[in-house]
Figure (cartoon, rainbow, N blue to C red):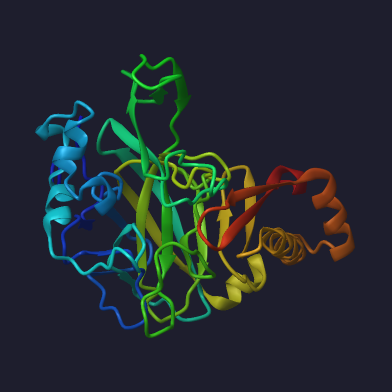
Length: 355
């Protein structure tokens, strides 16, 4: 099933389709951006998202032609992707990022210093295929891949159940490798207080391109609000991603995602989480503090510091005992190493502290 704009299941009455005037391409919202939608705390918003794969200049900026080469007929290509690629939307291919990101949603009552909780309610694949790319000498092995120095875009279909992605062992062979999909949004964030829109690639305290694959349905992302109204946004849809995202991209594929916004007042946020320096993820099983820095060693150190502070605020755990606990019981994962600012995240089991 292909979820074209305004068709198929749309969970929320607040629905934001992808149109040239409802998205940014390659930049993230900042304080000066006007919201395209305003909602009260507790409201759900359904966003259509479009993957950048298949619409970029190095792929021809023509999704009909790009996906036709992989056997997708015209009805199987998203109409909003076609419109966006053909539009004159502002984007500098040399200076801006690749990501298509929603223009901001104002959450009434959110104030600087509060936390915005973004609850992931639903993530529906809009198409039964996606793309994994390695380009521009980027990734974990720059200078080694791509082998010929050009963009390598690996087209990937879903199986008949829609739950697993398929790959061949060599080019032009039948797909014999399959792996489960776990759809999530690589970009969820709040506007920065700066007057200029930030580049869409590096993440920060505001969230953005954090690429944490735990942010599937049922998870929550907590973000320190930078400007009144929060000015929240989403983008960079994925079907699946391994920790590290080593080739440069995940399995990039368009989603229809519904999130619910909640505002946590500064005093309540301090009591529950401490002073958050950046994004915090919560799943049914884990608290997931993060660390960010261009240097991966520093990102890991920041993650550990944030984890110690979280355990102290949430459970009253002494720092030296929290440090010992993290060493013995908590995995520190690499979120990604390809987004200029590298990311690490810790998976703290809530059950270890009684739930």
